Image 1: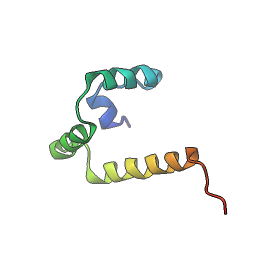
Image 2: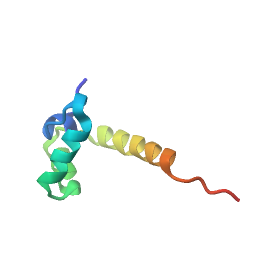
Image 3: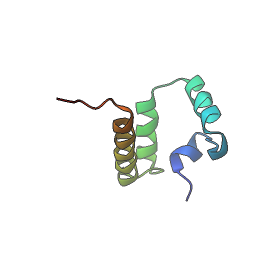
Amino acid sequence: MTNPMFQQYGFDRNNFMQSLQQLKSQGGDPNAMIQSLLNSGKVTQAQYNNAVQKAQQIQQMFSPSVRR
């Protein structure tokens, strides 16, 4: 199943970094883009929540762990 957020902004799964750079060069407010996708129904709240959860898990993998 194709990710609707990728489809909306023309992401190419095979060249993710180039697609990300193209999106970044378009400018704009990422939060507004996400809100637009939610409002239009192209992305459900459940899909958004799932993406946020996965992003947080990835972020934790790259964050230095706090040792006591």
